[in-house]
Image: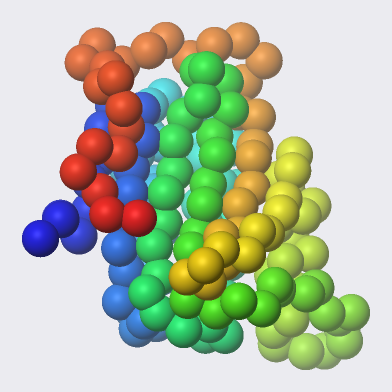
Length: 153
């Protein structure tokens, strides 16, 4: 079958088990890709935090399968998609200042340039876009014509 993870010079795709330990794998994989693409550390830290929040939500509140896609667009913008098997769109909750959870989507909305969700026939995709530089990041040497070849979506 298709691989669990696929990386390319400009993108990655990762299928994740519905296990809380998978959040750490998503963070590490995203951080490695962002570093490889030359994304500045401050933007990369924010993106990894947002990936953590969306993957955590998918694993805790939705059904499987869960997947992550992350890619560098035009050398200056990172787009992230997290898919899961639930058809309900996530709703930010007004936060109780003493609550231990419930502020993840508000955090993602504050750090992202754009955030959204679309319902699909198999569940939903929650996505964000984040500009990482005003100028283009140089393209990797071995650019693939399509960043997700061989990945089952």
